Length: 362
Ligand SMILES: *[C@@H]1O[C@H](CO)[C@@H](O)[C@H](O)[C@H]1NC(C)=O
Image 1 (cartoon, protein in one colour):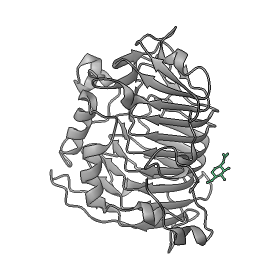
Image 2: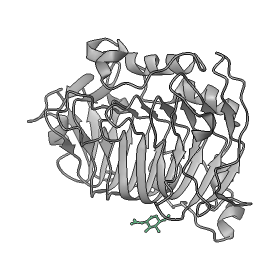
Image 3: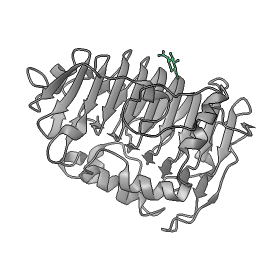
Image 4: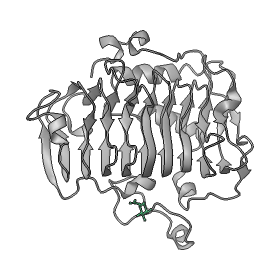
């Protein structure tokens, strides 16, 4: 369990620290999520879209811990709506784990949800291009950890009007359609040790107070974005590594639409903009025309920033996403390892050339 420095707690700054963590090692504002703790353990026993033993049925009631007795892809015929008070443990699945394909996983309007080691891959199998791979709009107290979120159509992650959220140790990659990463409003939110790959924008779009620590962002067109019209927020942006790729037109759009109304503590960030196949960036801590904070706005941000930007690249490439790492995540990680030479913004998952129509096999 990661214990925070009690001296930091004493100063009374805004803090996500809570008595009980969602799980050992949970960090950030979503670590407050209680999930299905104390509830019933429900087994997913088949890969069916619905009916007895299905994932859809398992998540249809609150206060549950969801475990998987099967592995492989569950193909949705429509969005699946989670209940409040759920823990979804994808790493309970045998073999190579579990994936959701072809529809949105939605926690919209719900609270206290913990999701770990789950692959959420919407793609064009979903005819509704207005939906996202994972939707936590208007949700409260949600933590996503070691998830693999790919092929989102509207956003990879929709977190508009979401309160107290964390996305950690996850892969957020290859959005299609709008080609957006995550859209967060209200907050606060924490993005920690994630791998963001080949998106047009919103990695994330932070119209909220945000912690952004040890993320790796590859082949972006615009990466960390506040939007000039979204309101004035505080952002701790620490020890992240921005790496340009073939789709990057302006490396300085690592920080995008960061106006003087935004207050930013920026430290230890790196940018590798030469696309030369080697990780050899330089310090890059000027965040648009944002107002510079001399100390983080959130009390535990420095304590969370344990890795340098370069070490975050090593760590994230090795550990981010659902485990065990499957074909699609391996494809994504290999694109990043080209350090500038490989990478495409896709409109359709099939164009990746990955097997199974782009979804790969789990
Ligand atoms: C959000 O988290 C804080 C603790 O960091 C807590 O005081 C607050 O009640 C939470 N908000 C909601 C809506 O649960």
